[in-house]
Image 1: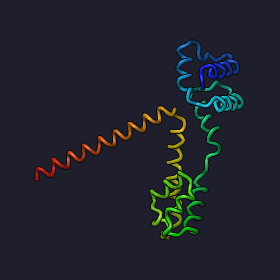
Image 2 (image 1 turned 180 degrees about the horizontal axis):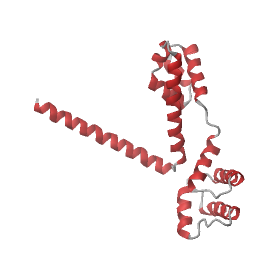
Image 3 (image 1 turned 45 degrees about the vertical axis):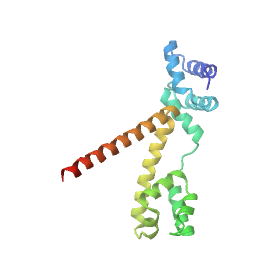
Image 4 (image 1 turned 90 degrees about the horizontal axis):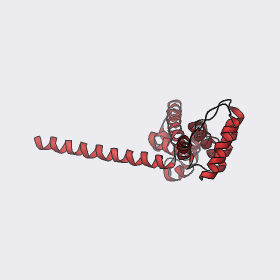
Length: 185
């Protein structure tokens, strides 16, 4: 979204909530623009319309980003759909066609199944426990994804790079510690 489009969004917010003292100066407008600039204008406008239609109070930046995520992503699948994908994969692909089974699953279901182990799920006799574990992991991954989707893309990239750097540093420190320990023996 460019600044002219943002000005339209800003004007709509101010017109809809005239008693709220939103974006009173250029600095606050700049902060709002910085935090919303990566969003698509039409998506943001639709999210604002939803907010205005359903809320008495003006939106925060977080409110708009969350609603934009909902507008662009659509309905979020629940864990039951993922469980059905897994059951179908086990039924129709079997234990030995794991790669083909993953192709039939959505991204979150793939992550859950990889954590639990596809072959373990195929041979398991405790479906109730498997389903409970599947649900718990699915909802955790879904919540994490929902939180990440709300963040600006450049912030997502920075967080991912920071995470990789921390993991790399942690591995180097543990390797160094192991070498020191081995030398003492």
